[in-house]
Structure formats: structure tokens, C-alpha cells
Length: 203
Image (tube, rainbow, N blue to C red):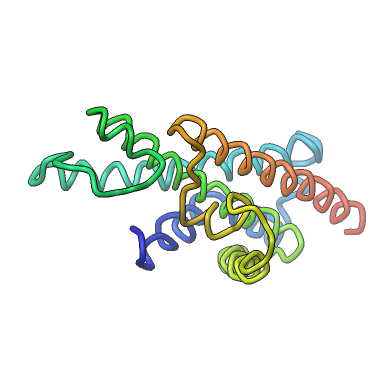
């Protein structure tokens, strides 16, 4: 995945299609009020964010697992370690399955960020094309804004999305990534709830 465009395909674009564009579709079809009358604005908005995050995570994780199982029919799961990433101690300890779980979880969390960002953006511009493309545009803008400045390495968007930040152990490295993703998703989720409420009130 590293050094290729496949990262943006797997973790950036594909996870947006299962669910992250549904608000834009429902708004264009004027179906949002139908659901909000039955659930309430808050429940509707929170469920949209949660399901976008879960579907994004599962799309990336299941996609990578299918790829691994397909290759496993012809290639061994693990021969030797040449990764140099924060989860490498698991390989060196003879735990390739646990390494694979950490690795897939790390990149699936990137998919969560893209999916929630697509949902958030679609509440401002309820258009499916915008919902799919805007997260990538936001990524490149954030990449430019966080590169070459005195920002901690683990807060740089390129490390958060494309890389892994070593903290001393595989567990803390994954927990740090999870914590940052949760904080960003909570912020975008809060913005999503507020923006949907404003749209309903002004419609």
C-alpha cells in the first residue's frame, strides 16, 4: 500500500460509497424530514455519523482481509520482517496475525476519518460528488498546512492517514492513532448535528 495510490483508493474513496453519501441523497430527494419526524434531529444526525464511521471502517478492513486471504492461497503469511513500522515488534515476536490486525485497524481508522469527513461536508453541500471528493481535497489542504511547521509529528495529517507514529510499543501506537481519530470524528460529528439542525430550521 505504501508509496502508491492504492491507499487513497482503499482508505480514502471506497469507504465513502456504502453510506457516507446517503445524507446528500436523502436531502436531494427531500426524504430527510420523513426520518427526522420519526427520530428527531439529534438521533438522526448521530446515527448518520456513527454508521458512516462503522461502514467506512468495515469497508477498508474487509477489503484488506479479502486481499490477504486471496494471496494466502499462494503465498505464506509471513517469512521475515522488513517493515520497520511501530507494529514490527509483533512480527519479531512471531505474531504475524496480531500484526496484521493492528496494521489493518490502523488504515481502517484512516477510512473512518474519510467517511465521517464526507458525511460532515455533505451537510454543508448536499451533493454526492462533493461528498466523495471533498475529503480528499481537505486531506491535501491539511497536508500542506501541517508540513514544514512546528507541529508534532503524530498530529500531521500525512502521518495520521498514510503512516504510523511510533510511541514505544504497538499497543500505545495504535491507541494514540485511535484517540486522535476519535477526537477528530467527535468534532466533525458535533458539526454535523449542528449543521443538519440549521438546515432543517432554515428549510
